[in-house]
Length: 137
Image (tube, rainbow, N blue to C red; front, side, top):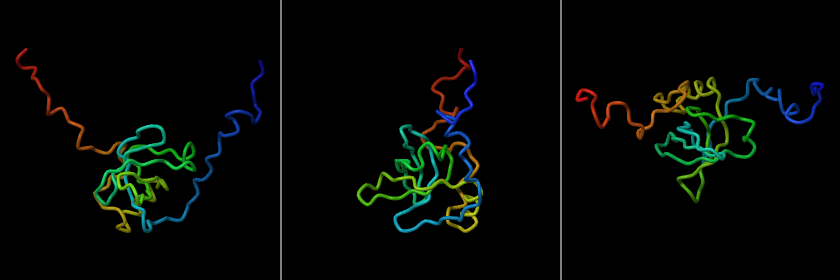
């Protein structure tokens, strides 16, 4: 059978990621906050630690879905909800260069790790808390 070289199916969507040019750095406004992704939950949702000190459940907006891939450890801009403080909406994902610029402008704290894959969470226990020891066996 001949190989499909037309513009149908997934081929139409491939190669469209041409927005790698420099864009203007967008700062937060009223009702917005910078956050770092703790973990992805699926179904367009994620858990993020906002730099105002709260952990929020965030929803990726439809314009960003399947176009901008968000991973754990990324710096994002979230829009806060007036009626639900524990939930927020992801407005923008910053690339690592933009996140470094935000840190240089003192918009995000210096304690934020930019190039880390996953953020250290307080609930994750290390190997120190093992319930038994191997010495007795």
